[in-house]
Length: 446
Image (cartoon, rainbow, N blue to C red; front, top):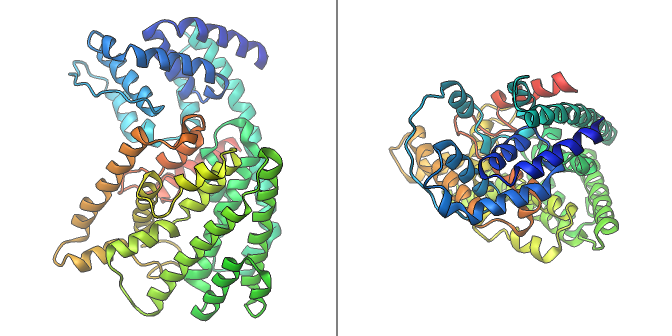
């Protein structure tokens, strides 16, 4: 049934995609329903046609069509000029939902079920066919996610790290949710692997913030920089256990990438983990000495300690990107797209950590550093200056300086764009309000 429905919808998409206005509506529906992975060639055809005709058609088109075309082209990395238009009608309900769940900050899979319900039985035939396909696809994907989550939970329990470190965070569902950036159903093992990476970043962060003495943390970091388990001989058992899991998991990933794509990235993976440990150690030394760094110094180090570079490096290698492209994209001294995303993540994570778990007072804060340099300003004023700049830089770079991989691998774009949330709400994957939405989604579907 799924194959037959897919064929019918593909035929309809191919036919409707030739019409400018209907092509946009079809593309929007495909993405909102979370079935775009079936129609990559059709999507490219529609977007290329719209891009070629943009300057000629947007002057005569209706507001909705112009806005939709502009967003879709920008979203997929096409450069288009901005236009001005006047809204002459009221769409209160649609606008309210859009403001609550901005499309550019939301992963389509989370909103697909809601969009399915919005398509009435009186809709056009192609819409009804697409709705039917989306419902079938949704059930298949949710079953797949359930198996992936169980696979990751089993791995996490088998590491024994949660039992050894009772004060460390034990949040496997939250960690698995980070892997939602890899939305293509064919990337099942990729999602499991990404969840493993996220769990290690969190547990290592807690070792530096909650458990380790400074002397042990120095040895801990040196063992990773040398990638030598023997260096950890005198460390506490929980640190040795963590290193064992880190080394084994990283080498397993490197072997998988080598088998799948023909190159072994182990040296790059070792380096990015060493950089993360170095950044954590710098923060630990600041805390131990009660040193408050300059805000620029804090943020430069803090962009590395977010784990963003670790996450994206693994993601790109697992997607098959070669080392030279990936290394350039993730250059930690660059102030490009990854830096902006990591800076945004650092600011929002600092806000979240202010009241999170056992982390109070341990992590430091960019806002504290900034306010120390700018006497007399309030916390709210400092945030109003800092956060919008990061959001602006990231959005500009996502539109105009897209990583070569992200034009064909939407996971990279999703991994970056989900960080851009309202600072009062926090991260998509971190803040309690949004986490409740995500947990509810999975409790209902898994």
